[in-house]
Structure formats: C-alpha cells, structure tokens
Amino acid sequence: MRPIKVLVVEDSLVFRELLVKNLNLDPAIEVVATANDPFEARDAIIKYQPDVMTLDIELPKMTGIEFLRKLMPQHPMPVVVISSLSDKVFDALNAGAVDFVAKPAGATREQIAAFVRNELQVKVKVASIAKVGGWKKAPIIMPSQPLQVKKNDLVVAIGASTGGTEAIATVLNEFGPDIPGVVIVQHMPPKFTEMYANRLNDRCKIRVKEAKNGDLVVPGQVLIAPGGDSHMQLVKINGNYQVVVKPGPKVNGHCPSVEVLFNSVASVAGNRAVGIILTGMGGDGAKGLLAMRQAGARTIGQDESTCVVYGMPKVAYDLGAVEYQEKLQDIAKRTYSILSKM
Image (cartoon, rainbow, N blue to C red; front, side, top):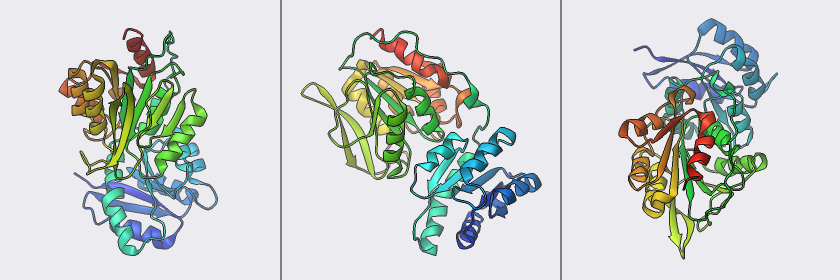
C-alpha cells in the first residue's frame, strides 16, 4: 500500500519544517509538498494531488477558512486544521475540514515532535479515509410533532468523534426546549469543548454548556463533557439525574470516552433513555450503546452515507446495538418520534 500523500500548508518556516520531518517519520505518510499560503497550496494541489492537507488557519494573503470555503466546492479533499486556541476552528470545520488538532504554543522541538507522533499522524490517517463533499448538502427535516410534556426522567445520550462537531450541531439545531436533558461526549482537546458549547448555545434553541461536576441533567439543556483527562458519567441522586466529571484513565484510547458515558446511562437510566452514536473513527461507545439497548433504551446510529467516518456507528451496528439506522438529517425526527412514545 502506498503512503498517504500529504500537503503541509503553514507559514512558519521552522514549524513547517518540523511538521514535515516528523510526519515523514511514519512510513505510512509521505509529505509530497509544502505551501506558505493558499495560493501556493492551490498550485501544489493541482501538481501533486495530495490525499490529505494539513492547514494552518492564520495564513498570509488569505485565511485558511477563506481558502477552505473556496476550495471545498471545487476540489473537495480531506483537511486537518492545525489551530491555536480559537473558536475559528469551528468555522473551519463548518467550511469542510475533517478534523483539527491544537497547535502546541511555545513548544520545544521535542514537544512538537511528540505532538506530531501522538496526534497529527493519527488525524492524517483518519482523514485519509474520511468522506468529504456532498453530505452536508442534504436537506434538514424538521421534527413533525414537538413533545407536549417535559419528562424529567428521560435522558438523551450522544457520542461522536471525527466529523462529530458538525453532526452534533445538525441534530441539536432541531431540538426544542421540550427535549429531555442531553449529555454528550465529543472527542475534542481541552478548552475547545467550552468554546464549542458556547458556540452551540448561541445558535440553538436550547441551552448548551460544558459540563461541570454535579450539573443537573434537565429538559431543554445539553451538557458536553469537557475535553482533557476526565470522564463524564450519569448518576441519579434524590431522584434527579446529574453528571459526575472526574479524572480517569483513557478508555478505548479516549478521555472523555463515549463508552464510559453510555455504560453509566445504561446503568442509571435503563429504559428511560435514548442513545445516539454519530460519525467517528474506531469503536468508542459501541459496547456502551449495546449495554443501553440491552437495558431497554432506544438506540439510533448514523448511517454510512452521511458519516464523515463510518467507524463508531458501524461497530455499534455490527454488534446489534443500533435499533434505528438513520441519515444525519433524520436523527432528530427519529429521536422525537421515540420520545413521544416513552
């Protein structure tokens, strides 16, 4: 199998050289070209036909986001954004980037090498099999019948990874204040989850916040597990759902882990829950979704045609954990249909 051809777009010469050197240490990856700005990148794409592009957001002549908006409709390709701590990364994902990594600030050469080995190489490999272009154009279908009663004993649990930021936004945009409490794990670096939650809170009809230990799970509110070294679990205290956010080892290579959240929902909420597994690489959450279904919960998996990476939903489906397999634009409608009968 030939190596993954990568184009590195980065205006810092030193950082660019370190990216190239350390990406090339992986025999499955070959950096075929570099570019200082989007115009050089455009020419390199035509000449070298890379499989994946890494892209800095802050570039001379044109921002990375502007470049993505011009590039993706004409030449869709997998892009991994390398971003400093800024919510602009979500504009890049909305413009078509597959995923992002947090640029190490003030890092030494050794720290940058570790960042490339431990994070960027993996993201490039995942991006190389991601589906890009077209799937976001599917029409959004509004849920037909809103729920008439807020039910405090119900909970909706969602898990996602690669491609999940946009997929989650699509689902949450169709949820109204009548939706039961929602708990979410989206694989994301520390600090970005708070920005992501705030961004969704500004755009959705429901409240969205980064979860804190002890937060109540209440109708019309979404809690997103913070990125970092903690897992989020559902508990029930004095008849009320709450979340526990506490440090723990990685599960399935992730912290927070969808598996940990779904297992806790299966144990605590049983048949009073809906589990949703969305686009993502690997199998995190698949066994947890199966545990939820076996406990009586209703479960939904995103279908292959609308996934950026049909990994987590496929593993869940193959295990028998998925009761309903739906296109992304139909998941909110299916969720409302299920909840109206619970």
